[in-house]
Amino acid sequence: MTKFIKHLLAIFIFSFAVTSAKAQFIQVKEGRFVLNSKPYNYIGANYWYGGLLGGKGDTTKGKQRIRQELDFMKKNGITNLRILAGAEGQGIINGIERVNPALQPEKGVFDENVMKGLDFLLYEMGKRGIYAVIYLSNNWEWSGGFLQYLNWNGQLDISTLRKKPTWDEQRDYTSKFYKCEQCIEDYKKQVNYVITRVNTYTGKPYVNDKTIMAWELANEPRPMRPESIDYYTAWIKGVTEMIKAKDKNHLVTIGTEGSIGTENSDQLYEQIHASKNVDYLTIHIWPKNWKWFADNRIAEGMPYIIANTNKFINRNSPAAIHLKKPLVIEEFGLPRDNHSYEPTATTKYRDKYFQTIFELIAKSKLKGGVLAGCNFWAFGGVARPVKNQLFWKEGDDFMGDPPMEEQGLNTVFDSDQTTWMLIKKYANILSK
Image (cartoon, rainbow, N blue to C red):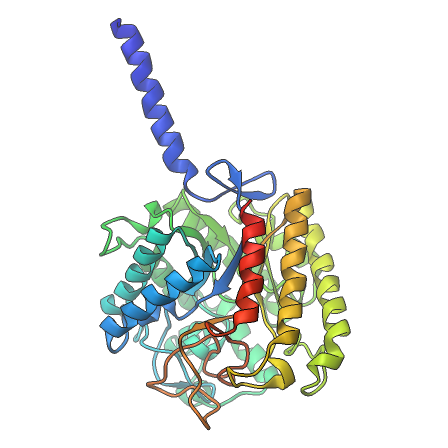
C-alpha cells in the first residue's frame, strides 16, 4: 500500500469517526429529530426531581431509586426525560415549601453535592440510552426560579416572596425578571455553571455528553405582562446565543406552553422560535388548569377536553411547519378517574387522553410531520402519597406533583398497569 493510499485511508477513517461521533447527538434535519441518521420520535416522561434524588438525604437510597425507576421506564419504552437542573433559594415561597435541596441556595453559591445528583442521573440514563431535556430555571415558584432572582436583587422583598399572591400580583412580580439586568446575569451564572460542568461519574464534559438532548431556558417562561414582551424576547435572544456559543453539540429550546404562554399571540410564539439558535418548539396542555372540565366531572368533559386539545395543537402547529422545526408536547396530564388522588383509583379517562396524544404523534411520524414527541406529566415511580395529607412536606418522597399541587393529582405511578401498557404499545410503534 502506497503512502498516498494510506494517507487517504487515514483521512477517511478519521472523518468517519468524527461523523459517527457527532451523529450520536440528537439533531434536527428538515423539521424532524434525527438520531444516528434515523428519525427520532418518542414517548417520554417528566422526571423533574430525578437529579435531586442522588443529592438529597440518603443518597444511597436515592441512587437505588434512580436505578430502579430508570430500569422500569426503559422496559416500558420511555427514551426521553425532562429534568430540572436545580432549584434556587431556600424556604417558603408563595406560601408553599419549595423543592430542595437547592442547586443555588444563596445568590452565586452553588452546591456541588446537589450537582452530583444530576451527574449520577445522567450517568445512569446514558447506560440505558435514555435522553435528557434539562430545563435551567423556572417561571413558577415551586423551585425558586425567577421570583428568587428578583428577591436576591432587591426587586421583591422577603415578605412578599413568602406570601401567596393573587394571579395578577404574580404576573406583575414575575414580569419584572426580564427587565432586571442583574437578575438575568445571575441566572446566566447558573446556566453557565450547569452547561460547562464535567460529570464526576463519567469524567465527560456536559457539552460532550450525548445523553443530553437539549437545554431548555426555563420551565414555561412567559412575559406575564404585554409590556414585558420586548424584554422577554431580548432575554431569549441573549441566552440562546450564550448557550450555542458554549455548546455546539446540543439542541436548545425555550420551554414555552404555546400561544397561551405568549399573551395569546400566535405571532409572538412563532417569532421567538424563529431564531437559528432555537432548534425546536414546545407546547404544554393542561385541561384541568385551563378549565376544560367542570369540578371533578372528567368523564362528562372528555369530548370537550379532546376537542380543545386538538384545537390547541392545530393552533400552534403552523409555526413549526412554517419554521421547519419539530414540535414536542412536553407537558400534558389529567387527574385519575373521579379526580381521585389515590394510586389505587382507576385511570380510564387519563388513558383515553394519553392515547389521543400518542396517536397524533404516531400519525405525524407516518406522514413525516412536525409533531415529534411528548413527555407526559409526570412520572412518580415507586413513590406514593402520604395518607391523609394532600400537599408535599419536607422529608416526603418526591413524585410527579410539585409541592403546590395535591400529591397524586397528575402522577403516573409504576403500578398504573393500563397506562403503562398503552405507553409501551405506542413507544414500540414510534421506535420502528
